[in-house]
Length: 127
Image (cartoon, rainbow, N blue to C red; front, side, top):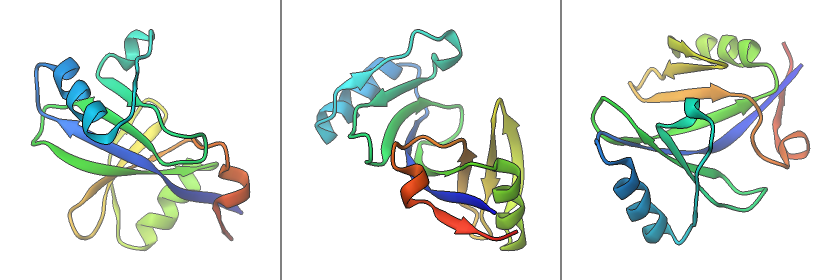
């Protein structure tokens, strides 16, 4: 058995100015910016949401701007396998998560648990 649920929204921005993009989305959504000091997170700016709310990140990318979702799971490989059985395809592994593509062509990521209510609220899937 493993668990998964919708974790958050990632605002992909094809930009050289992540600061301005993050400032726009922060003000537009009424969320303060939370920057990481980890150099591996240089292309991301988190927008502060509640512990049990969907998280929102602004991300610097090299593809057309869009919004994608993240699905959080306590067993990434099991969740990726489940989604492949539904027709999704693996695109690329990045550090600890997978970029996937739905049969509709939409890209999304499968990531580790992010939200405080994960254990209580996530869907449970039998293998």
